Image (cartoon, rainbow over all chains, first blue to last red; front, top):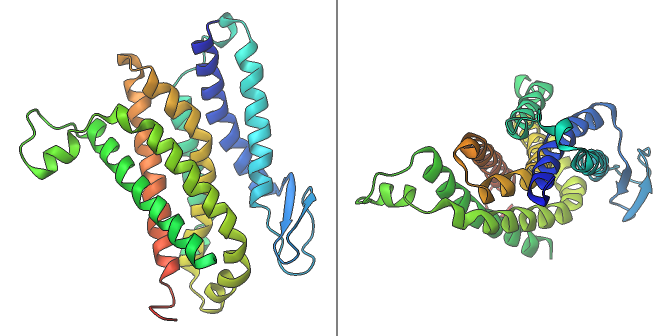
Length: 112
Length: 153
């Protein structure tokens, strides 16, 4: 595969896998790290709040970036025959679906 | 310091909003040449020239927002909850998730703008429009949260 095609595969897979993993991470709290804003400290994994609230957003993104980046890199190394079925439309259809999913998951905020 | 960073975050978002809106309209509602009116000139920009600026502005806006987010979590969100402003709180929750999803789209957005073939056009336009939705939602939500207690509060 050419470098351009490898990057295309990486970009499509990353845009597909990272949002999917992100929404799963949010729903199940699979945070790679936790930030404790009162003590300005990071901890590994999803930790319970200590002094003040715990922030998982950074951890959810780290989980998604790791999964998406890893999947994209592996897909970019695969032979062209295995990636020719990868459709560019996935790069926007999956993120669109994830955006809609978040609106549905958080709808209770707007229905109180 | 937080106020200064919030203003920088807002200014970066304004620049991003302008760039992505120009680009989105240039691909979704392209102007017939020659553009005579203000609206037509707004839509007649060469969208490809905005790509790197939009990516840079998105990342910078995201990074500054991520840096000030803990201060929001500790000092502002509690107030929003005490005010029982649930819709505004929910809008901000959506904002943080939209911003993360937008980051994941940036490599594909760049690739499909840098490979301007006819078969990539729909993907490029859809990625651009989706990024515009994210940027508009996040800008308006940030604006509402910023002003939720009114001027001088």
